Figure (tube, rainbow, N blue to C red):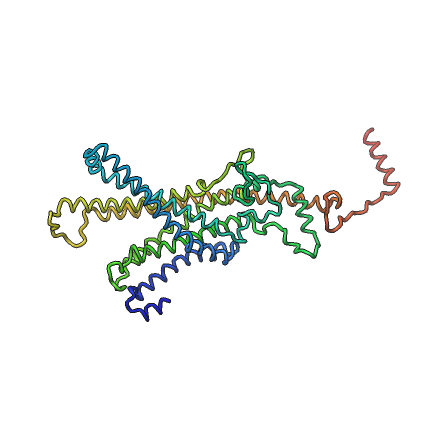
Amino acid sequence: ALVLTLSFNPRANFGWADSLVMLLTFAQSFLVIFIVHWIFHKSDLSLDAVIKFFAVGFVIAMPTAFIFEGISINMMLFVVNIAKGLLYWQFDEAYDDFVQDHYLAFWIVGELINAYLVASLVEEVCKYYAFRAMEHPDLIFLTGLENDDPDKKSVYGGVRNYTYASHNVVEAKNSRSFDENDFDISIKRSFSQDNDHNQFEEQNEVRTLRQRAAATATAMISCAVGLACAENFIYVFFFGSANASGSSGSSVAPELGMLVLRSVFPVHPLCAAMQSIGVVKKFLEDPPAGKYPGRIGVGKIVLPAVILHGTFDAAIMCISVYIESRWQNWNGENVDADGNAPEVDDGFTPYHALLVNLVAWGSIVATMLLGLIWYWIQNRNQKARLQLMEEREEREFRRAEGRGRTETPDSIGSYVGPEPESKPQERRRPQERRRGKTSRGRGRG
């Protein structure tokens, strides 16, 4: 498609250099997926699932986030304009003077609201629901569809509820315990020789809990990389494109700069990994002993990611506000009514460029490091908890398996399997019996 466009449409405002930038945009996303999935978690999640979750993020999550961000911005502007009108009607010129004196503070507050409530919250929620909307067999344990006997009488708020709703899946998981009867049934199934059905059809998940947790994190990261790829495409070719000025691809420096800036700090994959901590805790971990587990809703899952993403965007936006305010002040002091400005040297800035760049890069790097440290600690602790659950489940399974092999079939219902082997008891000779009685008698004397 690129070759045909460049060859047969000479009026296209798109050159070979732009094509290279577009390919690099996709290559950066594919590199992240290659490292996360193919190198570290290839055995935890199938490539089919990775491709589908990437497509969900690219095709569904990003357009949805773009639409809801626009709706949120317009709703906030509507409320702000109404508030401005009421305040001006009430206080008249005093309100204008107050706004002019504190316009920088209002500007920063507006950017913070945009960073946390618009960009961060909307994108993280869209990523989560795009991930949940995609049901894949590799992550069937998140849906409850693997349960052969769902609770068909589940009631929520006095109304019949969807059996496979997320909170029903969690409540069913929390109500399950390592019941010995459950293990008896699994032993029965494992020894079943019924040829009418696949004997492995009703077996439990073959992956360990830690592998399922890794599969969940990989899938969520794939979805986030899809959203980030589409977002990078929009930022590179619409917000940072040299073509916006009418050039025909003669300079791609702004495009490459924007792509490098957004590639060095992969905030979307990191936020998705942070969300996976809450998802795994909700669907895989057991509640603490003796404590009511509570409900892990969407808010608890996305909150750490919203804070990190919002802080990342807020740092960039506040630095931009400072730079633009310095330029406005300089123009107000040096530009006359006719728009004439004094001559300045090339590269002149009304602020300390090196210091501003150090603060900007330092705040962004510090934010990413704090997010990485938080995820590393939470992931390590979660793996330790899942390992304890695996060990406990293995012990209970071994104990139930040993009991199932020694008990009679009638004692465990419709047990179908090999008959327990009974070892014939040896009969002692009369001399040995008399010798035993004699030794016991001597011991009592």
